[in-house]
Length: 511
Image (cartoon, rainbow, N blue to C red; front, side):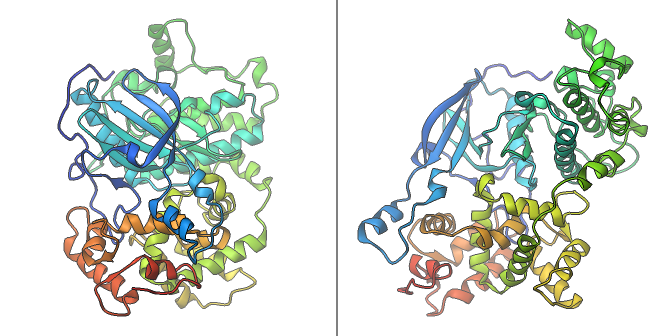
């Protein structure tokens, strides 16, 4: 296991130029790497300490009120003065004391941040921002209030199938990005809402490549009860994750019984190495044969015979349970489809702003959108591809659009040219269809884009947002294009009033 011994670190550990993937057209605008030395407590209020890990603390937090909002409320500005629900949105801030930050732990931390930046999926926990000062590192994360999977036993078979579909979809996303989690367990799956779970804790995750032949990892990491036999033997592939899913499915179906158990860690590892488990106990009497087959296919001893996450999503058991689920209201699908079509006509600066807002919206506020996304994502891989997009739009009763035009719209919605609409792209296009965009949300997006904090957004601000490292030339061209659409007086900049007028019809353009 990895060593996390004490050492003092006074220089930046999470330098944004280190191990950060090169951004595409819109870059990593959804995750803010704050300037070194910036205090997280200038932006957030501490509400409650949730845990003390020994190497740092975990806090439940809330954003501070935006100064611009306070001034506008005092002046009774033209923007409506409704209560801002997002101001009450909660966040988790993980603090890491650098006195406990060994070289290996620092590497794991950089690894977790970099991986979470790349994984955009409805069932993977989100990271919003990173702060660092001489003493500590702070990760601003999504708050999932429901507790982990161990807190809601017992589960019905239908509930387990629903959980497995969501978890496997997250694993597919990881593996498509060449990421192996390596610590899949009940404690690392948390309830975001009553019906939605999310995968978290990527500290042991690893990027892998398959340049030729089979790729194997050797480091013995993870939690013992979900380790695959190959991890214990010292040579394994990404299919160690499927084994972990199998262990979780076994436990969820049996009220918490583990497939491998022993009173001592050494004996437990021996039992796992043998790979022998039983489904003969009383706890299995009321479990269907299809569910048992599903578990067995994931707990296949030989990696090459173990089904992949993609194959598991096609299992008869999950398909049967999915057919018994309540279908989404057609009117919701129609409104979402219409929003997807009309959003491409919006100014690019507004679309960029909506991307920022969509990344931080609370899961509880977008339940209908998550369900709509899941309905469109027929392959359950966490993306919407062209064929899926065309199928939904062409089946809409309110829209009549040809195939060629749909292809053009799809390409516009595919913000990062990946051949698919990812979750945040989808939310940014549809958020206005179900949520009221209020002044605090608009102010937040403006402040994120006003990089120089001088009260205006200019080309340099947009360039800084659109290119963290190597895509400078592409970012410059895109910045000029975005600004030219809304800079009607050709001043080379826009202020908050003009920015807000993209969202509110009754806001005059003063600048």
